Structures are given as structure tokens and as C-alpha cells.
Amino acid sequence: MAQSRPSHAVTFDGAAVVAETTAPDGRADRLTILHPVTCTLTERRVAVVGANGSGKSTLARLVNGLATPSSGRVLVDGLDTVRDGAAVRRRVGFVFTDPDAQLVMPTPREDVALSLRRLPLDRAARDDRVRAVLERFGLADRAEVSVHALSGGQKQLLALAGVLATEPSVLVCDEPTTLLDLRWRRVVDDLLDSVDQQVLQVTHDLDAAARADRVLVVDRGHVVFDGPAPDGVAHYRDLMAVR
Ligand SMILES: Nc1ncnc2c1ncn2[C@@H]1O[C@H](COP(=O)(O)OP(=O)(O)OP(=O)(O)O)[C@@H](O)[C@H]1O
Image 1: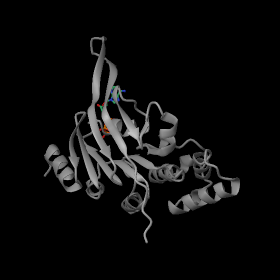
Image 2: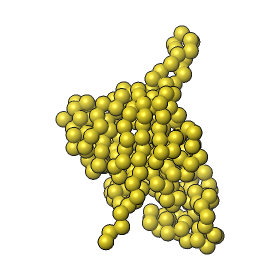
Image 3: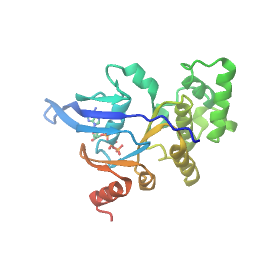
Image 4: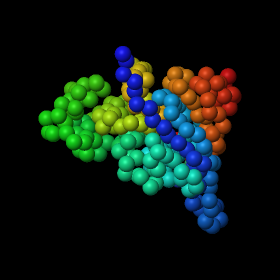
């Protein structure tokens, strides 16, 4: 009998984000980046689409506490991203759009090993896991080169590899395939489709969004659609008036 996968829940409970800004005349001002969002995401694949600057990354960052709600709250499997921040961060892996924001060690091997530092693995088990992950992402022969010598796509793969190696419960990806060629985009898409984690993916790739179990469309700081993928993609196309 097939083993059932664990299910997870990301809950936005009236979560809104307001930034302190400076008006053109120099006065302090407040800008609502994300208006209150209320929904519970339990689907295995959730895509977030919307125009540039609409608030997608802000919504994604709320899930692991990189952004904190100005009002309302965000819960991951019942854990509050503010009150239980450390536990949430252990549970939620986050892959940035820009891999340079994520890769901190001199070589791919060291970078993946660093991701694993908090896991209860002995040296041999950790080395094995690093090797297996680099192999899976086609980076085995790059393990010892300088991270700076990797192509943009290879860096993006490495950033994803480092996060997946920690086996988080929920994986949040902010445009994880933007730098990848078609072959590796397919590899990463297939991987994101197949992993056990709940995946919340911010994307401009409507093919990827179309395969999600649920799509959120964000427009000017509002979630303007929340539902099945075909309708979500159609809604976004209408919004962008490109259909
Ligand atoms: N701390 C902040 N202070 C002021 N404005 C901010 C802050 N963070 C985000 N913004 C603004 O809020 C808006 C939403 O930003 P966000 O990064 O969430 O958009 P996005 O939909 O992910 O965009 P993109 O597709 O271009 O990555 C943008 O206009 C951005 O400039």
C-alpha cells in the first residue's frame, strides 16, 4: 500500500504587511504592501502569481518569518511565525530568487554541508547526504569549485539543493527557475512536483502555475483570486490583458 504523505497547513489569519516609508516631502509615511490575507493552504502544490511589485514575495516571506505581519498572524502547522520563529524556520525552507543572497560558503560541497549543520548527522552521514544532493542536482563534478565560478543556473540549483537537503516540511520558492535553461527548468519543475514537501512557489512561469493544486493571484497587494489552477491562470491572464 502506498505510504500517505504527511500533510501541512499554512494559515494566513488576516495577515497584512505595512511598511514605514518616507513621502516625497520627507515626512514619514506608511505603505500597505499586503492587505489582510485570510486563507489556509493545505494543498501540496500552491502557486502564487501576479505582476511585478504586486506583493507575491512579501506573502511568501511571511511563511518563514522573513517578513512579519503588521497585523494578523501566519501559522505553519499551528506554529506562529513570530512567536515560534525558530521552530517555523526549522520547518520551512526558503529559496530566494537571487542565489547570491543564499550561498555563503566557498564551494558547493561546503555550502550544502553548512545547510546540514543543525541536523543530528555524524560526519560520514553528512558527507553522504551532501554527495547525494549534489549528484541529484547535476553538481557532483562542481563540488569543489569556487561558488563564484558557477553559472547563474548552477547557483540557483545549488541554493535549492542546500535547502532541500535539510528536508524541510514546507518549501517556499521565490521564482526558483528564472535563471535556468529549459532542461534544468524541467528538472526542477519535476522535482518540485515530486518532493514530499508542501511547496509554495512564487512564479511567473504559467506552465508551472498550471500544474499547481491551488493558485493565488496577487494584484496591488490584494489576493484577488484563490482557487484551482486553470481558473487562477485565466484570471491572471485577464488581469495582464494578454489573452
Ligand atoms: N520594506 C519595504 N518598504 C517599502 N516598500 C516595500 C518594502 N518591501 C516591499 N516593498 C514594495 O512592496 C511592493 C511589493 O513587493 P514584493 O517584493 O512583494 O513584490 P513581488 O510581487 O514579489 O514583485 P516581483 O515579481 O517584481 O518580484 C513593491 O512595490 C515593493 O517595492
